[in-house]
Image (cartoon, rainbow, N blue to C red):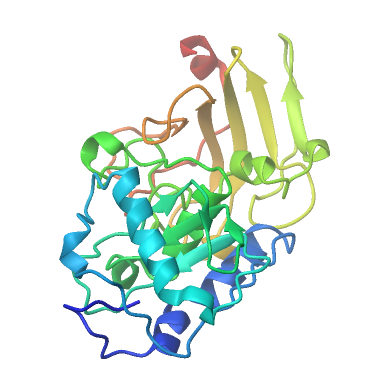
Length: 296
């Protein structure tokens, strides 16, 4: 899309190439080949929005109503020039000149295209796609698939006290951005038979294979309450985590009653206060869960 106050001087194909195919390959790797995201981009031309880019109130705190208006304006501008049949998620990409379209949120309500197609989820990209790169598509599509934000809303989106750089739903540019085993299990990329459940007191032993590669047991889950659990998984330096600056056993708590942006997953730092690297903490731990279970 472009705007009356921000006519495009870039190319639709160049914008597509900034997001695809890197993001679709990322999903294939993360899902062990189970998710094949197909993005059909209309690169024929820019479609002109009816209002100026700075009239949409498009900034942090954007209301659902204003977001929906932006999406509906875009869909009307496209009209019947695009066949939306079969679309499960709509991606709206603005020209880089539209500096007022600042960030990339996901709209969780449905919209109806001119051809009558009901589109269940929409991602509207903004200027942050130029800093986050293609992985912003993976993060926002994660929302469309039902995953929460793992960064802190209290910090205005800039704080990462809960998950650091250990999941793309947290710090997008983190050195280990592959999804946690818990999120992969929620997406059915990890089967129930790959989950080791501890459902009683005593001592148990589990052999886990790294989250980044297919096959084997992927996580041990200890239920600590109706909505809470402690999870252990193994992270390695391969696949989507090829740039990892730490490897080993990752231990975290999950609370499914905790809202997005408030820490539904909280990864435990093996050496609190040591600083870490780019939001990634030291996880070279033995896997002992006793003290964490006691705190839970």
